[in-house]
Length: 72
Image 1: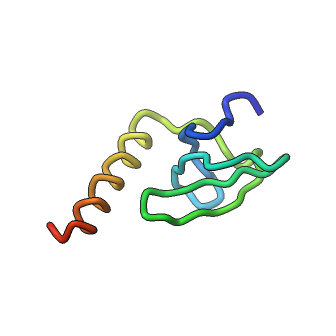
Image 2: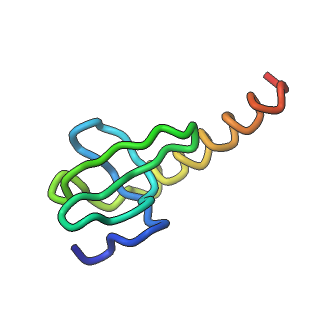
């Protein structure tokens, strides 16, 4: 489970989306999206996010922040 630590951006192959590691609970990892969505997944379903997927997650965070401010 190298590279799995809070703050790391990983790609969940089950849900087909990237997320940021919130916590590690044994063999399970809790991932979080910028919208507040959290889910628990076995570490074997994860792989490091590509640079494009990392940018996708950052763009989602930016869009979500704009929506919360009422800009969109």
